[in-house]
Image 1 (cartoon, one colour):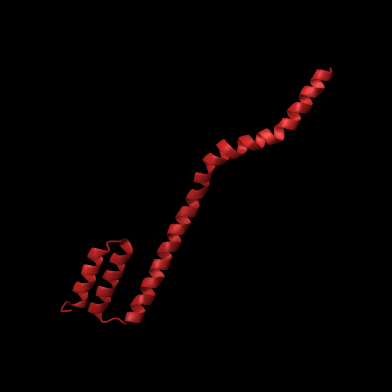
Image 2 (cartoon, rainbow, N blue to C red):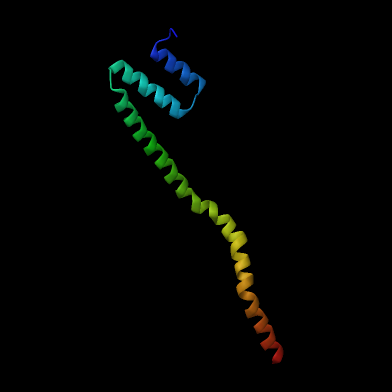
Length: 99
């Protein structure tokens, strides 16, 4: 009511200060100034956000093996060794005791 579209978008960006919102407001304001179709703006913005989300997911996927290393080494391997080595140790003690 009474504000221009660019001012309204700026106020919206101030209320919800996130990188995605800043990108949206910047793109919408620039498209409004240049007279670009709203549909084209939205398609380009959606493509950019999908690419950004995909790159963040790939980055998290590359960090996962490092995060799994601690539980694997300190929790899973020792229990696996206990389960696998116990019958061998019992057999070895039994055979050495028979000598």
